Length: 346
Image 1 (tube, rainbow, N blue to C red):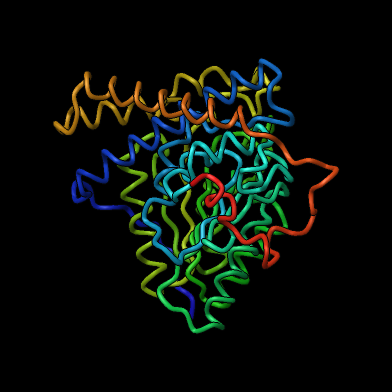
Image 2: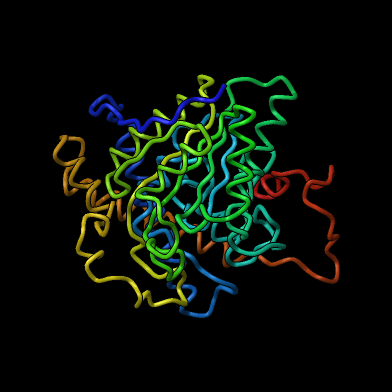
């Protein structure tokens, strides 16, 4: 029996202060990483697209920070922060974008498709909505193996909720009562298509009712609210309450990709609450809670930038795959298990 839909609100002020600081520093590192990616793209050093999560770092971080070893995380293109919170590194990020053979995809795949499936870190699928049934399938497989207490989280944008894969995946998860959390970043546009041309329901959270699953909503520009909400959603899924749908309102503070100037965005949205920069909100929250000072935040920012520069210097010195000698077997092959490159670094 599936859980009846009910919008839930997180109780405030019971988050671990150390978690708040950790989450903010992940957000800073994600922003520093993506600022560098944008610079490399403009300099012609990255082949393929660059899609940034500027303005979505709070929601992305919260989406994975409560996951544990054995859980599943399926990020989308704007989830650099969530990837880092789940255990990805800046070095592997830059290795993938620069095509290093030492990266997790060995320079074989598109720059946004990196992952470590054996560790529950699924590689993104470009077809929007597709990760919802994939993560649901992964959870079902864990169940067949007798594993308990596992949670799967994946992300989607507002436009992606209109896809058939989203419907099929959510419907399957609801029928099977799977511990799936689907996080919807309602950034107001599906590329350049505004919400009022995408759906007519009053709120995307209304979609939860059609599947008989629980729903949460939060302010995606508020780091504390995102953490509180995702903590409850992940906890509910882990405790056996079935799928959870989380809808967060925010605004993409850059274009759909670095090739897009976002000239179609309504200027009034940029001035509204959804247009706030979550990093600025988060800094203010930490300062007001006496968890950080302006000086400490400035130091953390510099440390994040230094970590990115160090990773870039290393990744740039590494070679790409050699097409004349590379054995193009799938990375899941026994001989090419995840982590093969770690031994080479020692």
